[in-house]
Length: 97
Image (cartoon, rainbow, N blue to C red; front, side, top):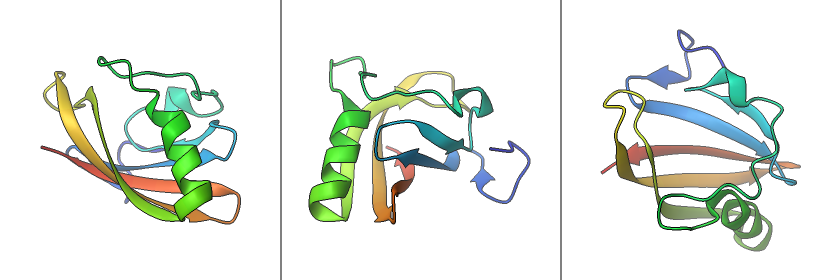
């Protein structure tokens, strides 16, 4: 969760969630760490964190599409996130389209 760390590059960063939707690490916004985002929805009403946790538990690895604020452009943009379940966590990294 360090903006100057090795896990962030421009608009590329990692996010780690517990299986309850609590943020364990967030490369773009360290203020999110410790917050439960299970009910968070994107601009289209998609509960993307809940979907992410559900997919991690059912599939293990997956790609997910949603919309999120790009930390570089500060605009809401389509994003594609790749996630993997690792023990009791979901580790994700994505790209803005």
